[in-house]
Structures are given as C-alpha cells and as structure tokens.
Length: 182
Image (cartoon, rainbow, N blue to C red; front, side, top):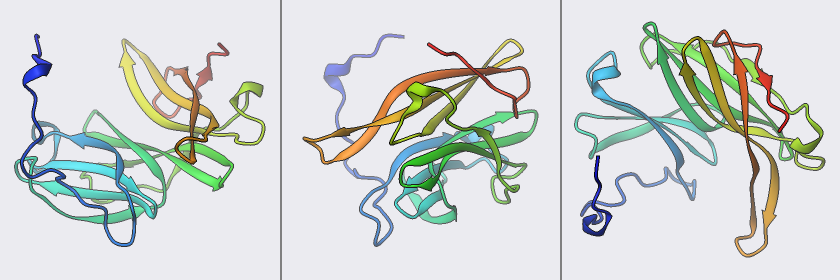
C-alpha cells in the first residue's frame, strides 16, 4: 500500500469526539470495526480521567455519547473465537499499575477483571512501578503482549509517560505471560 501523506487533511468535523465533562481529555482509542462487531456498528473504547468509555457509531464519524463502563486507562480490544477481550491498565495508586482483562460476547456486558501482568522486574520502575498500554498480537499459537513499563517525568510537558516498551509471551490468552527481560 502506498500512502501519499502530503495529501492528508483534517476531517472537517474534527475533533470527532469531545471529552465528557468534566474530563479534560480522551485518549488511547481502540476500535472494533463493523465487520468484527456483533451489531454491525463501529465500537470505540477510550479513556478519560474518569475511566474507560464505550462509544458507538453507524459510520465511524458521528459517535453517540459515550458511556463509562469501568475504571481504567489505555484500553485495547482483542477479538478471538466469538469473544472480545478488553485489556487495560488499572492503577492501584498513582505510582502503581497493572494490566487487567475483561471478556464479553456482545461488547455490552463484561466479566469481572482478571489480572494479567504486574511489575516484577527491577527496571520496570522504582518510584513508578507500572505495567500498562497493553496491545495483544497473536502469532501462530503465541500471544504476544506488548506493554509499557516504568514512567519518566517529562518536565517540558509537566506529566509522566511510559519509559519502556516491553514484550511478554504466553500460550493461552489469560497467560501466564513470560516477560522478556531485555
């Protein structure tokens, strides 16, 4: 595929989604396309400062007001065998987070969370011990969970961001996941 990036322009309706009041932001969207959804609609899961929200659209441009579904950050939806797996980051404290997953057959009702990954390696942080930003890819029979670890404070921006991008492998979607140490 050849993308001519010089001819890209902002959509005239941008931004397509505004943060729900009083959140100042929306971020880290994960989209289920119509051909992969149970109802033929677009489904978007994203975070605000108040948790993970679910938005629905008929055509991917006009989104119905999102509904908060539970606490968490940086959602990622993976589909397999008729089920949806929503991986996300959950903070225990402002300095500690872990990766959790919930399952659904219809994108409306979700299971109770299961912890998938928690900080365990020295370099995953001393003050900020975090595992987050999950992204799951399946190659053959191996589940490859890409995630971030640790935090670094960006003085020019005034907030923290992940320090490392990491990989953990498993033979089953719920793990156990073995972290690559480098």
